[in-house]
Image 1 (cartoon, rainbow, N blue to C red):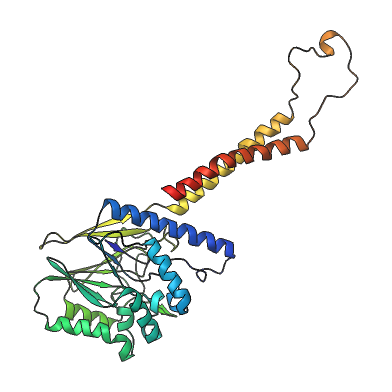
Image 2 (image 1 turned 180 degrees about the vertical axis):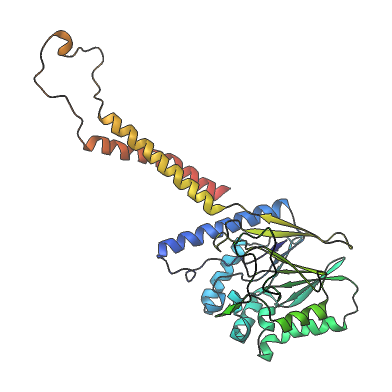
Length: 359
């Protein structure tokens, strides 16, 4: 199972009111935790790769806050059993990109999540995990681990087919479409760069990895949307896995499942997750409709005056009435409206809280 860019929301994620940030942190974490729990429980994958950008601002935190964010991350993505192995990768939001990677920050990440470049052997395939954000650095200390893994592959006589995992997608011509499953209107990944990010691995490094590793397939992340392209005259497929988070700009987050049981054919399945923002919008519509019904009910109720059962009015017994029609005080329908709102809230909110806690 391949998961990309969870980028757990933190206090630096948005320049918003602290209350709004707290809500975003709570619901985005809950969304990922629930989906991860049910996916691992019912699909029961043998290996789980989280392909970088574990945190949103991991590179910015001091050691104390970084430790707290790591604990939050493991609370969302707990190690469920020894039969399901977790493998982690570094992303630019975790340690930076290229010459922006600080060696101490890189080492801190590895002290919590293990080496950022490594090889995982399975029965028929070798997963080659390359930390391309560090490999893009000019600092020999930062890029050395990734270079060591690449150099090792050059002398490796293992005949297993290789699968390359990289956080940043490999270089491709800017005119190449990502295919029909992309959600963004822009159907390509542009070769752009800025502070601590670069959309594609450089042309030179991409060719180095393709020539040295010679993978049968490549899986990447970083873009947050799905993308499928081919390299080396359409011989090598690369799939960019969509973000797992509801807070990273995609209507439908997702993940990718791999079937590696066949030594001759590699099967992949794109899985979309629910549109949580759309569900919240529907909740808003239902709330507005409920309030409208209550307002109309109490407005019409204020124009009808109840009378005692079994009593005749003065007009009905032939006595002229000189008093004006009885009107309810304005405050009474308003009070009655808020009383109804309170009754509905007292019924629905405990059920909602129970669902959050138990489901």
